[in-house]
Picture (tube, rainbow, N blue to C red):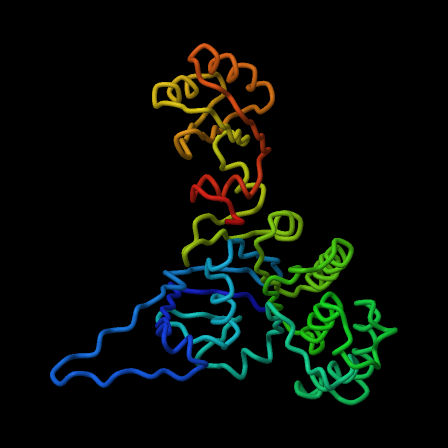
Length: 341
C-alpha cells in the first residue's frame, strides 16, 4: 500500500530552558521564592506555526529553509519523536499520535546527525535493524548485501563503524533506513557535509527508491539539491510555509525572474523611483542606505542603463551581482534575507 503524508495546522511551542539551568550542566540552583510571589512563566519558542501539507504517495517532497525554520521539528512530529502542541499529522491513513506503532512500520528515518552504534560493524547494524522489523535471517543477509553494494560500503562491511568517515556514516545511516523497505523515507539534511561525488550518489539512490512508488520527504537548505531532486517543495521560515509548488513554478513566481543586487555609495528614494521606471524592472527594494535589490525581466543588458542613471544622478555604483531565476531569489523576495543567513 502506497502511503502519503498529511499535516493539518501543526503547531509546536517549546519552553526555553533557563539560562542558569543551561549553564549548570543540567542542574539549576534557584533562590527560594519570596512568600506571596508567583513564578514567572517560562519564555516560549514557537517552532511551528500552523504547518499544513498534503504530500502525495510516491512523491519526492522537499522542505527548504534556513537553520531554525522548523524543518527538523516537522520531521520530528511526523516520525513520532516530537508531540505537537496542536494540529494533526498522518502517514497514509494512520494518525501519527494515535497509531504510533503502525506509523513506525511504514517509515524509515535518517536523522540530521548519524546515530550509529560504534561497537558494531556496518553489516551487523543493517542485520539488527532488519531483525527489529521482523525480517528473516536469510532476508536480512540478502538485503544487507544489496544495500552495502549500492552504497559502496562492501569493502568496509565487516569493520567497526567508529573508523568510518562522516560521509560513510551518512551512507550507512541511509542504507539502514531503507533496510526494512519503508513506504515513506524521511531524510533530514541528508547531504550535509557530503562531498560532491557522494551527494550525486545519494541523489541517484533516492530517485531509484522513489521510482518503486515510495514517498520521500527530505529537508535541506541546499537550493541545488531541492531544484534537482524534489518534484514539489515547501519553503518554510519561522515555522510557516511561505511558498509551495514545483521548483519551476516557484522560480517563475519571482517578479521578472532576474535579481540584480546593487551597491551604491549612497542612494535616495528619488533615485530608487528612477530605477523602478527602467524598462523591464518589476520591483525595487532598498536593502539599506547604500544597497538595493532590483527584480527585472533581464539581467546583464540592464546594467548599462543602471550605470547611466546612477551617473546622471551623481550616485556612485560600487558593485553589481546578477542572479538568474532561483529558489534563493524566491526566499530573498519573500523574507528580505538570504537562505544562508
